[in-house]
Length: 118
Image (tube, rainbow, N blue to C red; front, side, top):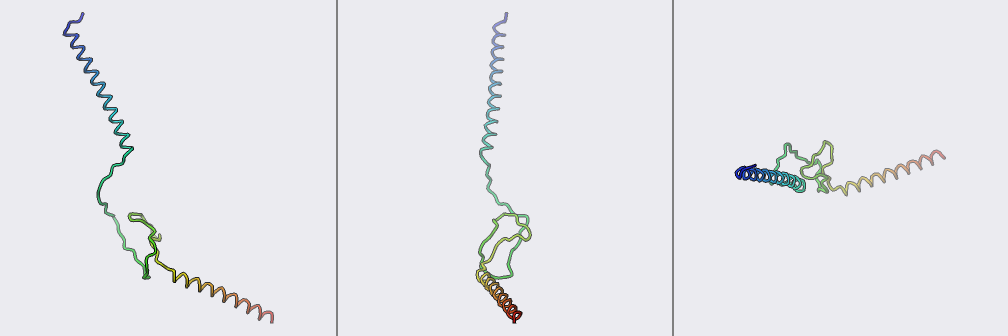
């Protein structure tokens, strides 16, 4: 038979074991909760990131900028179109020259047909 002191000590030991068990479960729960929270939220930091390489971009032809095809911080490759200038007048001039060339070719072809027929 156990003495009163032994019974008291047994109760204390069971209480300690129960407390440790509950604390372990609480730790696991809070760890799991933190992992789920980390997945749900992203951490934001304020700061400034400096580029490792910068390049000046320019054009031999002066003009008005029509559009920029890249955003700040984008990686670009050699030969990639970064921006374009307004070229309405140049496009119209090119189309006119193309139309004249086609018209001249048609006239020359008709003249050659006529000369051949004569």
